[in-house]
Each structure stands twice: as C-alpha cells, then as structure tokens.
Length: 161
Length: 263
Image (tube, rainbow over all chains, first blue to last red; front, side, top):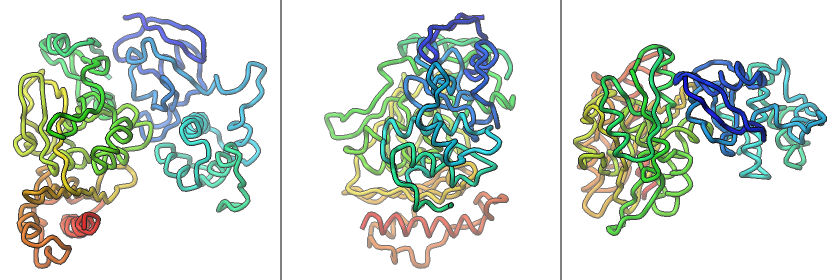
C-alpha cells in the first residue's frame, strides 16, 4: 500500500491505495463519493468523468496514484454547500436532460469542462464534445439543449422539442 | 487487474532504471494499457509512469524546422500546441478517441502500442518521422513491425517523436464510431522530394505505406492518378464492421480525399 494525497472538491484528502487502485475506486470506496459512476469500466461510456487539474478524464481509466498531488473535482463539488444546483445542473433539470440519471454525473462534468474552454458552444460543438459520454435514455437532445441553455443561449431552435 | 508495483520517476534515467526489473512496463496515459490489464490480457509486475517526466512533455520546433513532440505529451496538448507548426498533425491528435481520452492518452503510448487501427502510427509513418528513444533514433520506416509490434526493446522509452513538416498533409479517417478508432485512415504528406501515403486500420500487418499510390502521385498529384490502382484485399482486416474488400476499397476512397485536401 502507498499513501496518496490529493485535493478533492477543495478539501485535502489522503488514503492508502494499491498500485492497481483506480481513481474511480478511490473516490467511491475510500472517500464515499459515489456520485462518480462506473458504467462500462472500459473508458467508453464516460459516466466516471471527473476533473483532474481542470481537465475532464475518465476516472475508471486512471490510477489513483497518478492523481497524487492533483486537484480533483467530482460531481459532489458542483452544487453549492447548501445544495443549490449550479447553472449546468439546474439546466439539466429544467430541460429534462436526464431520465435514469446514471450517465448524468459524467455528462455534467464533461459539460463543465466544455464550457470552461468554450463558454458559448454551438450545438454541433456540444454533440462533438460529448462523443465520449453515452446516454441510453434521453437520445441526447435534451442534454444538448440543457448545455446550450446553461451557456446562456436560446434553445428554442434545438432539434428536439 | 492483477496486482503490480507502481513507480513514477521524474527523470528519464530513473525511469530506465525502474524498467530494468523483470516484466516492468512503461505507462503513458494508460488509455489502452489499463483496460488491457483489467481484461488480464497484460499483467506487468511493475508499471513505470512517465507522466511525471518534465523533459518528455510538450511541443517544440527544432533548429531544422521539424516539430518535436515529447513522448508523454497528451493528444489534447498536441491538438492545441502543434496547430500552428504542423496543422495536419494537430488535426490527427484532435480526433483520437474522445475529449477525456485525449486528456490522458499520449503520443509515446500510442506509437509504442502500434494498434493496427490507431491514428498516430499513420501520421508518424506518413510524415517519415523519427522516433527518439532513450538509446537511439529510429526512422518510422524501420519502427513499425506489424500489428502491436515495434522494434522497441524491453525497457526502451520513446522520449520524443520528431516530425519533418511537409508542404501539405491531410489525414482522412473513416471513423468506426463505437471504438472511435479508424475503420480505415489514410495520412498523406507531400514533401518537396516526394509524396508519402500511410494507411491504418486496414491491414492485418498494421500500418503500411501504399507505395504504388506514392509512385503515381509523384508523377502526377491529382486524384485521377490513382485510377487503375487497387489494394489487394487478401491481407486486409475483415470483421463485423467491414469486410476485407470494403476496407481495400476505402483505402482508395480515403486517399483520394486526402489528395483533394492537399491540392
């Protein structure tokens, strides 16, 4: 076992992990931050997306020890302390951007990473950016709509009504 | 995943020393290696992460004008930082996998793995790049040795890849949308002294140069120059995503698109 230390959602944390412990396992099993979901476990579905030093990554495909010293952000850090949803989360609720909710943490974290670099993405840019996030319920239209809305854009002309 | 030791050195020399133990393996971004280990298709005794080695990071322009990419540089970074100096290379990096994969996956990892459908091997071979390791410099023409096989020795690390910059270049990727690898990808580079055409995703021998197309394009650089040229389907990959004949046909289609993009 090796000690790993990082900042998660602004708090310093540490724990003992094996070399093979995945970042997703460390977050879920040791820190009890179970908002980060593990869907495919093969780095395809994107349910496990978190931010490491500000970049979206698939936490089921990164060793916890690789995140030693990093600044990690998870879905638990998106809402305010009092539970008030952030603008992306609120837009997902307002525009029905989720059904079963399994993919939603990864979708929100990917959306946050996109909007940080590209504050007013086009519909096409959003769809392209979400290539690594799979949703089996919504058909994506309302997710795209929610992200457009979160970026302050008019969503009346988006494909699905 | 089976258990393994983990080391994260900060210099190439320390990484080479760490890789000296039996069954040790270098870890780039892990976007292929970690899933492979989860499937227990690989079980190294030790992983040596190269992500903490500063001298293997980033994009720089050499004195001779070539573009050198540190072996541990992520695809996302190449997509941004090589955009001015070698746009076609940046475009290749920007269409590998998806954004989260590009934030972890590295050029050294991709080139060392030599997946038969990966994008970078086509760009490296098509550009006539040089693979620089801790011990030597290897021409791309000598480096790739068939599916998942290269001339790299045990414990040898790709420290950088050096690309000569062509007059024009284009990568045409026919996406396999589930895996996000190339069903067929063609990288065409036009240099003052000739054209290079490298094909990925198609052959059971991995990335290869389509020399007949190169000869034809050296005489006449236009899409019609490929008239009458055909890839023999016998050695192509055939699977549920596309037959051998389909892939052989796609090589011609994607090469023509690359010529048009460079014309």
